[in-house]
Image (cartoon, rainbow, N blue to C red; front, top):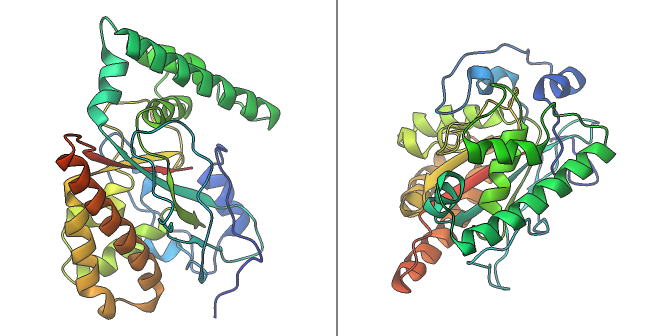
Length: 297
């Protein structure tokens, strides 16, 4: 049986370093590390599979408060996949969220030479959210070196002042939140690197590499950003048209997976089947929510 907390470990919007966290909650299985280059991210993401912990039993969670308006709101009947209680005595966990939308609109906003009136209004909302996040971090005593508001301006100008700072990831996420759907809560996880152990188990049963969680959860944003400096915050994307293939692939091997990974696999199956239906419906209406975005923070 897994030891679990009485409450789910959600820690939204806090720049907690995984290196600090692992010092407080290290498992008995060791702390080996292993490099793995990811698009737009660094090798800090890849840890050895022995340095992961098992998620506790699933618990139905509430969807977090929306971070920005989105054109594809979830219907009231949608039940989000449940959050996870984490093993051990700490209350620190990393929240994984997913949203959908047209990534081209985000890229256009950040790279436009001359913005339209609609883009200016959207940018004003994004800047307001960045300022709110800066204020929240200041209240929590979190110093990012570069403010998120400044990082947003530097991304727009194409002139980041540093190669290593999480503020740019937060700024990019706020630009995404202004265009994408309300986020779906995929649970709180003790250590992001746990998903690489899940990669190995799925790959062993023939799941394609592009559908492995370690691939799409940490693939990085479509624009090159300064590295956040640690494993979180992390941004990943998956083409929406691949949601159906992912659900089918995981469902086909679900019964053969180690019990440790079945709960997470079911979460992805349920979420991806819903997103596949939403994608088809949106296309019939002439919209193109082409991207699933994953936000680990």
